[in-house]
Length: 155
Image (cartoon, rainbow, N blue to C red; front, side, top):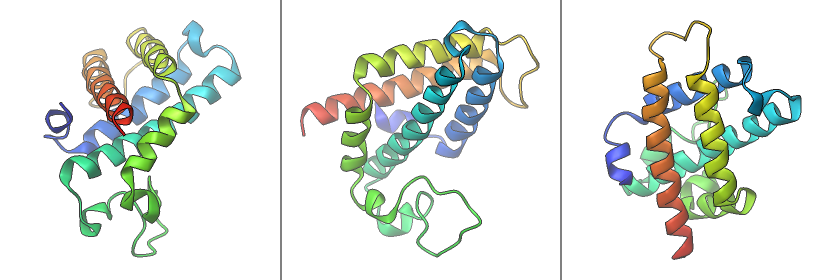
C-alpha cells in the first residue's frame, strides 16, 4: 500500500496538502469556524507531514543521502525541512510519536472534516488543485495513516 502512494513524487503530495490546508482554513466550513479548530488543523497538518516523510524514508529503505530532502544535513537554512537528522534516522519513532499525539479515531475524523472543507470550497482553487485532486490525496493520506497505524500496532 505505502509503495503505491510513493510511486509518484512525494513533493506533489506535499503540494496538494499545503493547498488543501489553505482551502480548509479559508472556507466557511463548520469544522474550522473557530480559531482553535483552525490551529488544531495546522498542528495536525504539521505532524502529518512528518509522518508522511517518515513513511517515505521507511518505504525507500533510505540512506542518509536520501533523507536529505527531509532534514537539513548541509546547514542550508533557506529551506524548510520536515524532520531533524535524528528523526530521519529513526522514522519509526516519528510514526509512534504521531499516534501518541493523535488517536486513530481523531485522525480519521480530522481527515474527513478536512476533506469536506476542501470539497465544499466555493472560491477559486489554486493552480493544479481541484476537488478531485483533494479527494485522491485524501485517499492516499488515509491509506498511509492506516498503514502507519498498523505498523505501530506491530512495534
